[in-house]
Each structure stands twice: as C-alpha cells, then as structure tokens.
Image 1 (tube, rainbow, N blue to C red):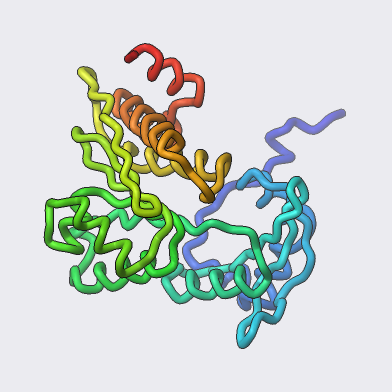
Image 2 (cartoon, one colour):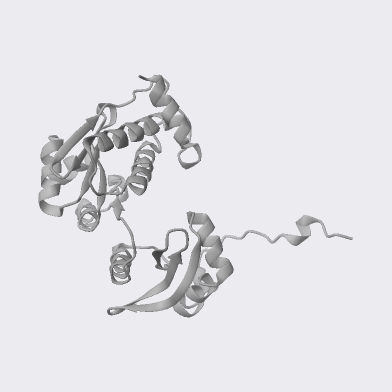
Length: 267
C-alpha cells in the first residue's frame, strides 16, 4: 500500500542559530552547499544552471567559498557563504574574488536609505559611500542625493557622483517628477506614469531597480545610446507605476507584457 504524502514530508522548523546545524562554515556549511543536489537547488532559486568547479579556492590572501560555472553562458560564479549577518567586509571579499577569478559581473547598488534604522546617520553615509565606490550601476533616489550632497539640484548631485566615484551609469528616481539617467556625460530624462488609483508605493523603487537590471543584462553597459536610456527609464517608470496599484511588492511585480501594454495605453 502506498504511503500517504503526509507521511513522506518533513516538518518546517525555524532555526534561530544555524551554528547548531553547521558548526563550522568552511568544513560543514560549504561542504554541504557545494554538493551537487544542493547546488542545483541554489541554481534553480537564482535562475542559473550551476556546476561546481572547486571550493575554498585561493584568491590572493583569501579563499573563495565556492567557485562554480554558469553553464548556459559559461560565466564564472563566485558564492560567498555567510551564516550570520552579511556586511561590507563580505561585499568587498566577493568583489575581490570576482576580480581574481575573472567572474563576468556587473555590480549594482541601491542605497535604500531608511534613517530610522540607523543609530547614527554618519554610519549610513559611510556604508553608502562604500557601495558607490564599487558599483557599475547606481540607482539612487532624490532624497538620497539630498542626504549625501545637501542639494536638490540633481544634475549637480549627479556631477558630484561622477567626479568622485566614476560610476558608468547613474539613475536618479524623483517620484512624481520621473527619473533621469546619467551616462558618459549625457543626461536623459523620462516622465513618470502618474496613477489615479495608487494603493501603496511599497516596492516601487525595487521594481524600478529590477527593471533596470533586466535592461542592463539584455543590453550591457557599453555604448548605450540616448534612445536606449530613454527606453530603460520609460519601462522602469511604467513598471514602478503599475506596482503602486496593488498591495505587496515582489509577488505582484508586473510582467514584461503587462508593462509594455501599459506603456502603449498611455501613448
């Protein structure tokens, strides 16, 4: 007689301290995660077909936890394990690993400043500057430009970002005033898609950022034209507008076809 499915399934349990399961990150957790079946599950979660190349690969004075290959395009993938909270040290390490192993990657950064979450805003400033020193694409909001540079002149803010950080693509979101892209000394601006039926703005910035990343992944960062930048901003503005008409964030992000239909309806 076949067992009922309920007898074959385990029980989900919350584990507050992962060290009770994996006492040593290198000897236990890395070894577990790098097993083929677990690496396959990780690949499914992030949309990659992964093949392990090695573990604890030496890169300068460090060791990369898992060194893998993304099979569809043959790209190098670096996996940095972290059982506790991540921080800028681990971000710096994985950037070092990626450079040392020639991983094909574009680094994007969204400061997503939330002042109530910081005991000292000077610490927030330092962390934001750390990310800006290392990214290829910066998505930053108008209030974050004001926080960092004490100006509401966003062209001036973008010029200061370019002068200090040399970020290839800077995107400034301005809410009801639309968004701007700054790329190789050029500026492109796109109007917003204002909504009459906004429910909440949760997820609008994340949706804008996700749309931007999708465009960069499809088109790259080299030789973007003004038309490319306008297309990027228009799609991202439209997607961000659509999500404000629904409750939630990730689960209600619009599809590509929904965004394109919405843009067409506004022409």
